[in-house]
Image (cartoon, rainbow, N blue to C red; front, side, top):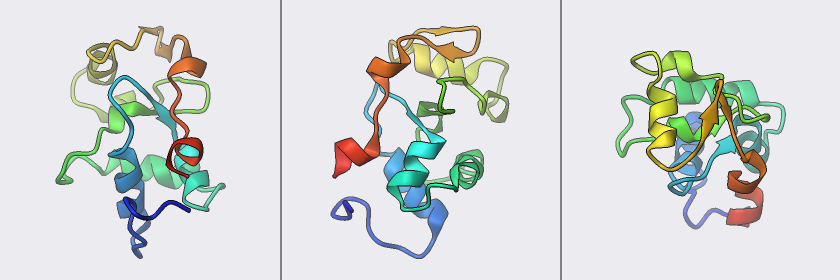
Length: 116
């Protein structure tokens, strides 16, 4: 596992935040991909909880870049405003139609492939 940027810490949420901070501008990943990378493949929901609680983290966590496995903005209701998550993604050049990321396969960032 890749731990020279993601330090081995006890707090699962902090590990999630460390991985999420590495998602490049204009790319997205899924809750499950982060969980699998962290060796907790069945913990996608926990990654979601971490994203929901990431608003006060420093440095900031780009939680808008984490979506479900189909590219759907399932966490959008946790952002201020009605379309903030979508607006943040679109500001990075990502096309979203009816709460779903278009061309998802090509902008998907898999931490297992990218950080290993």
